[in-house]
Amino acid sequence: MTPVPDPVPAPADRRIVTYNILYEGANPEHPWEQRRAGVVAELERLSPDIVALQEVWLNQLTAVQSSLSGFSWVTVEDTQQHTPIAYRTEVFDLETWGSFWLVPPGSEPGVPGWDAAYQRLVTHATLRDRREGVSLTVMSLHLDHEGPRARREGVALVRDRLGDLPGDVVVVAGDFNCPPGSPTHDRATADREGQPPLRDAAAVADSHEGPAESYTGFGPSDEPANIDHLLVSDGVAVERAVTCVPLSESTRPPSDHRPVFTDIRY
View: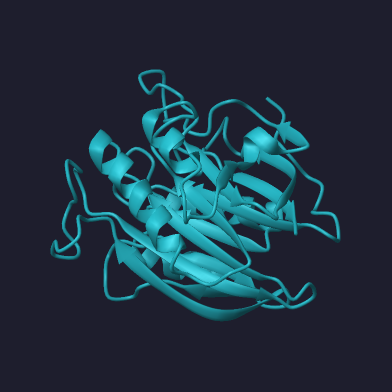
């Protein structure tokens, strides 16, 4: 399978990458020490302006940070679980950032919400495009892999929070653990009064490239699935939506997920 893509973004585009890099220790047959270089190589090859990562332990975050130049990072540093956002400093200025847990209102932060197997943290950043003057709010999320209610309630909470955040346009990026057409994906993209509408970038892109599945697993027992998405608000033109085949996927895959990106204009 041919790796996708290579062209750098057009000068007028902004490229946003979402990538679940798999927690260290999650698969002993594919240790982080053997995957780290591949993850960094993919991020460098794709030449993003914004990166949203999932499944990142602190030492993995430190390793990626030290290997990518020209970026600043926003993440909560007092927790083991990270859904960090990186932005290219020559392109964006940081206006504000924060995080929140996907739990029912009034629940203790940092615990699994609803029927989730694990606690889930969302990171958000509002960035000012230095050339365009546009304010862009980006979210990095990782919905639960086991709890269907947790996924549905999680995206509802994300939609609610977006209404309280600044930003002329919005991009929600991450591992949704569900495909298009699922109840969670439908809820994430449904028109809701008082909330900014969201569209799946892959569904509205002028060009959609790459394989159908973003999750590959590491072997024949793992069922590939299209579960990593980028959602965009009105006012965002999607030039390309791409699921990328890593250069080393056939020999030493960097993760059990492929990176996904979109090139946007606003």
